[in-house]
Length: 103
Image 1 (cartoon, rainbow, N blue to C red):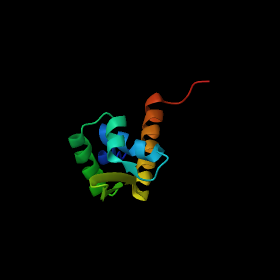
Image 2: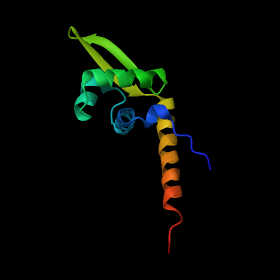
Image 3: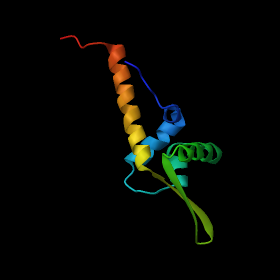
Image 4: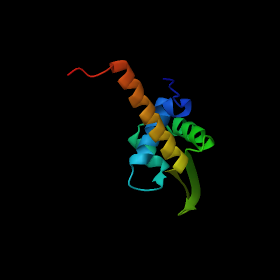
């Protein structure tokens, strides 16, 4: 059995971001909310979001609201599919390492 772990998703911070977006009740999540809840710096979050956007996993929206820039992020269909495939792959890997269950 060959494992194909997506290296974009496998990076810790990017996995956290995708998981956070996938489990969020809102479709578009504010940049600052992600930053605060995942305890990331603005710079680190920006770099990781750019990587995820380039991979097609997220979409970044920028607009001006009340004369202030506002950035929101949403998970794409490809991002949700990629995350689900990653989770399935990791579950298979764990099962292989654990071996068959003993009764």
